[in-house]
Image (tube, rainbow, N blue to C red; front, side, top):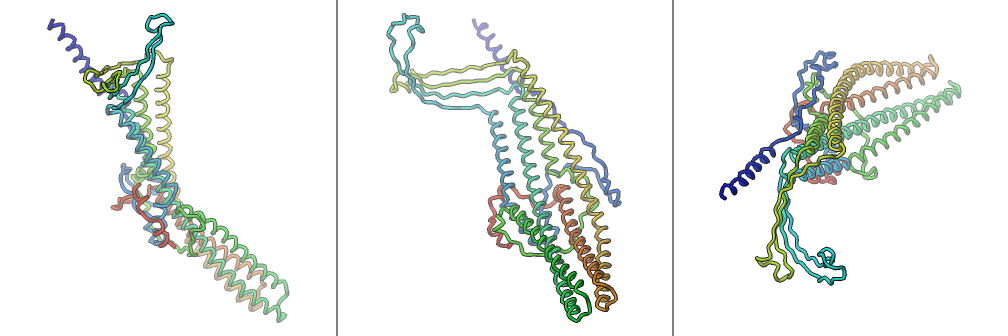
Amino acid sequence: MMMNTIKPLKSASSLLMLLLVLAGCSVAPTYEKAEVATPSAYKEALTTNSTWKEAQPSEEVARGEWWKIFADDSLNEMETLAMVANQNLKAAAARLKQSRALRQDARAGLFPQVNAGLGANRGRAAPASQGLPDNTRMPTSTTYNAQLGASYELDLFGRVASSIDAATADTQKNEALFQSVQLALQADVAQAYFLLRELDAEQALYAATVELRSKTLKLVQTRFNEGDISELDLARAKAELASAQSESLGLARSRAVAEHALAVLLGKTPAEFNFSPRPLARIAVNIPAGLPSALLERRPDIAAAERSMAAANARIGVARSAFFPRLDITGSAGYESASLGDLLNWSSRTFLLGPLLSMPLFDGGRRQASVDKAGAVYEEDVANYRQTVLNAFKEVEDNLADLRLLHEQTLAQDNAVQAAERAAKLSHVQYREGSVSYLNVIDADRTVLQQQRIAAQLDGARAKSAVSLIRAIGGGWEARKSAPVTLSTLTEANPKTIMAKAD
C-alpha cells in the first residue's frame, strides 16, 4: 500500500522537475545586431586630409548643450525655453511614458495574478435539469460566496520572457526616439534663429541701400533742377529707390514668417513672441573636420532602429512559443453558504486548485502565419536599420562638404563684395564729374547690393550647416559632463521666467 502511494508522488515530482527545467527554455532566436558596412574614413575626411578612427558604440554618451559653442546668450535662452515649452517634445515624452507603462504591463506576467470577490447568487433550476417532470415546482435558492483567487502561467518556453524582452526593447527605442525629437528640436530652434538673424542682416543692407539711394536721388534732383541732366536720370533714380523699398518690404514679410515659426518652436503664439532685429555677423565656429565615425553610433535614430530590430527578434520567440504547451495554474479559496450569517463559518469553506496544460492541435496554419509575420517584420527592421545608417553617413558627408565649400565660397564672395564696392564708389565719382551716365551708377549699386546679399546669405548658410552637421553626428563630438534634458525637466523649469530673459 505504501509503495502504491509513493509511485504517484515520484511521478508528480518528476513531472514538476521537468516543468521547472522547461520553464528555463526559450524558443526565441539569439539576437545579433545586423552588420552594416562602415568605412574607415569619410570621403570628406580624405579630401581634407583628416584622421579618422573606426566607429565604437557610444549611445550612452550625453549629447550635451552643443549650441553653446556659438557663444550666443539669446540662442542659449531659446534652447532652454524650447526644452520646457515645445509641445512636440511633450508629446514625445508622453509616448515614452506609454512605452514604459507597456513594459511594466509585460513584466506583470512574471508574477501570480491575485483577485478577491464577494457576491450572491439567487436562482432556480429547471425541473428537466434535475430529471423531474416539467410541471414540478422547484424551490428558489440564494447562495452567498466570498473567494480569493490566483492564477499563474509557468513560462515553459519563454513566451512571457520574450514578451518582456520585446517591451523592453520598445521602451529603449522610444527613449532613443525621444532623444531624436529633442535633438531635432534643438537643431530646428538654432536654424530658425540663424535664419531670422540672416534676414535681419539682409534688411540692414536694404536699409543702408535705401538711405544711399535717397541721397543719390537728392543729388540727381539738384542736378536736374540746375539743368545739368535730363528728367530720364531723375526718373531712374526714383525707380531705383522705390525698388529698394519694395524689396525691403518683401524681406520684412519673410522675416515675419520666420519669427512666427520660431515662436511656435518655443511653445509660444506669434503674438507672445517678439525678437528685436539683430543682423547676423560671421560666425567663427570650428567643428573638427576629423570627426571619428564612432559618433555616428550616437545618433538617436540609429539607436532607435537597432532597438526596433531587437523587439522584432523577441516577438519571433513569442510567436514560436505558441507551438508548445502552455501551463496555467489556477486556484481559489473562500466561503460559500446559503445563509449570509453562516458565510464565514469554517464548515462553509471551499477551494479549487488545478493546473491546466493546453496546446492547440490544429489551427489551419494560424500559428505558422504569426511566426512568418514576425520574421518578416524583423527583416523589415533590419533593412530600415541599415538604411538609417546609410542616411546618417550621407548627412554627415553632405554637411562636411557644405562647410568646406561654403568656406571657400565665402572667401571668393568677400573679394567680389570688395570689388563691387570699389566699382560703385568709382562710378559715383565719375557720375558727379559727368564722365559716365547714370546707368553706370545704377548698375554698380545693384551689383554691390547683390554681392552683399549673397555674402549675408552665405554667412547664414554656414551657421545653419554647422547646426546640421552637429545634428548629423548626434549632437556633439566629445563626451560631456552635463546630462541631457530628461522627462522631469519638462515640468521643473518655468517657461515664463525663461521667456522674460529672452525678450
